[in-house]
Amino acid sequence: MEKVKTKIIPAAELEKNLDEIAGLVRGGAIVIYPTDTVYGVGASLEQPEQIRRIFKIKGRTLRKPMALLVSRIELVEEYVREVTPEAKKLMEKFWPGPMTLVLPVKKDAVPEVVNGGGDSIGVRIPDHKDAIRLLDACGGVLAITSANTSQDDDATTFDMARSYFDGKVEIMIDGGSSPMGIPSTVVTCTENGVSVLRKGAISEERIMECCGG
Image (cartoon, rainbow, N blue to C red):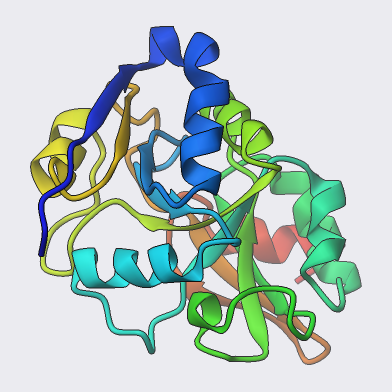
């Protein structure tokens, strides 16, 4: 894979570089950034080929979908066909925060490469000010996955992320260590109920308590 020049931006300098970063991402750059859980790697929904490049960089199968990181709850309806009453409760309780909700996706709302052409999409709002600033600058949404290669642990520090992606992506934001260092809990919400697909920072007990058991 061709090596690229990686621009590293300290989180303290993020604000003054946001316009430039957003322009690069919308133009096809891939960005590594800190979140409340672990570091993420993202690309614009307007750049399906760059989303596909993330799969190649990570060694990730195209059958394993990516998700959406959004900056505010109002954006969810642009991509999701239905929000069940249980999903709404979970959003109100745990967003922003370490929970990814898998919901029915609107037809043609995201490039097929993001979710493998399936009928659902994972969505999350991070509880991290720098991630929110980045998202807002990029239009409120990015296609995302964890910043690691398929055989390695999730990057919980900038040094880990850099060891995986330096020379492979265009932009890296140095936010030090992730506050939690634990991936988000992934929950699917359908008319048939609520199910935990991946254990993470929020326990199954808290989820079921929120949904009334």
